[in-house]
Image (cartoon, rainbow, N blue to C red):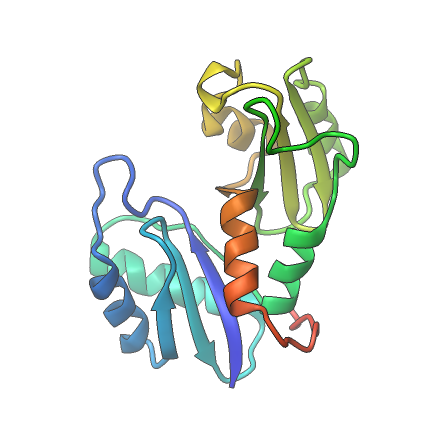
Length: 190
């Protein structure tokens, strides 16, 4: 059995409310084991026989749409991938914990094409910096999220033409600390 972390979009936002015990039950219905949730924002940890993450994403999205009645974009990462994301320093000279600064990570289904990356990088401002690495977009804010001219995540999605879900680096580090300890750092095929 391999451990995975599913990062779900549209859970407990936009008028959709899903209790975490109900969400765990939905994952158990799919045959996943040792299912746990981490804070009420759509982070689900589960075990499944080794399979490509794309297949798991499609399975979870289908089941959640049937059960909840709306689409839930799903981004699955292994503990090793999550640990690497938590440790990655895209902006080494900037401290995300100083002066109201924040670092967010947008999880994407795949690495965006260079043209899409260039369009998004063109949106950078003195307060909004972006960096792509693997299947993630790192967004460094030198202000509060609500004060950013790019506050709406839909601007990012429309520019990249791809769904995403975003988490604060603090949440990712806590997830990695709790669920990626003593991992083998293997990356499961997509």
